Image 1 (spheres, helix red, strand yellow):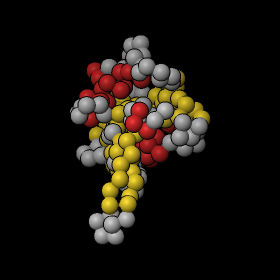
Image 2 (cartoon, helix red, strand yellow; image 1 turned 90 degrees about the vertical axis):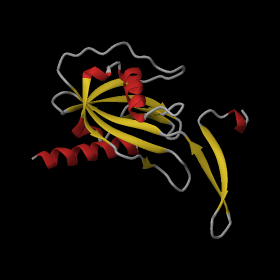
Image 3 (cartoon, helix red, strand yellow; image 1 turned 120 degrees about the horizontal axis):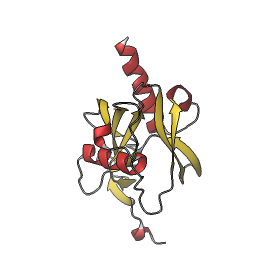
Image 4 (tube, rainbow, N blue to C red; image 1 turned 90 degrees about the horizontal axis):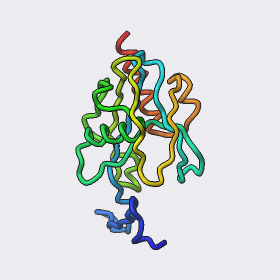
Length: 171
């Protein structure tokens, strides 16, 4: 495989504005990630999938790449539908990021929009998954108190901590 054949990662070079040294970075698409809660807020719907960066299967929140200048909310609706089977009518927002977080500003342009969503009621049945070609994942409803010890995924741990802050502010 040649570098020009890469679909998601594009290597770019800039000169530092002061020292003029060559800086290499990845010009990567922005993305969304969502903590998806049951209607009690006790369990979350997580995906288990193989990730090449960690060379293993990991537990993480549903997430996906923003395609073709798509609005981040539309990406959320699409990715949740594809990876979990739930429709936008099935859940409500507890949190919507107002601006994206830059994940690794020293080496990537990728920015991440984050959300916390919650099912509106028990008994809502998801549709069949619509996974991308080659995508293999397994959905798991897990007690959110346990997940932080089950993953090393940054976006998942960040959203779990954000949800804990949200709950503590309600009390």
